[in-house]
Length: 186
Image 1 (cartoon, rainbow, N blue to C red):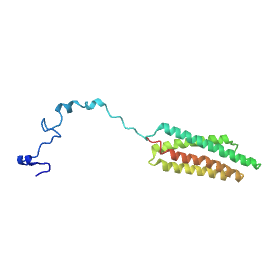
Image 2: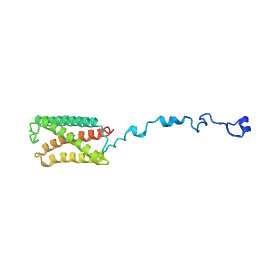
Image 3: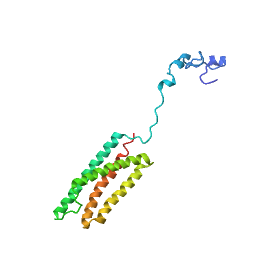
Image 4: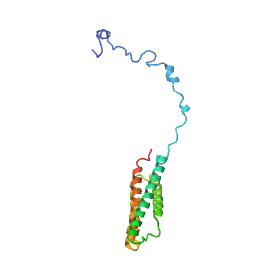
């Protein structure tokens, strides 16, 4: 005896017909005309869109993030240069910073952040692991920006002050660009 088989079907010697799909009409549970008329012809949809090349980046978020990073770097550059200048003035010393004002350091910070955004985008297009290359490139540029004033500025204390300003401009750029890199992909 098969599962679901009662005395009546056992006497007949076969399983009962399933009621889920009718076996009448060609074995389908619907009319033959249904399959032929329910779908539009394949060419009615048109061709598939061409696949996009390049990275999938949300341009609005990317540009907004780069501009916000530029603003933070500009504020950091201006603020730390102003503090260093105030400390030097407090002790009656003129900071030998090449004639740069805190406003110039703010502009340097903003330009450096925008260039970092361009570098990030180029690495995103051209490399398999853009974050790794970006971190190394910007990290090495920060080391150079800190070391250079220490090597060429006389007196040495003025070089230390310029190195500190450059460090405070570079670190937010590195940190913020690495942080927003996770959110700009679609």
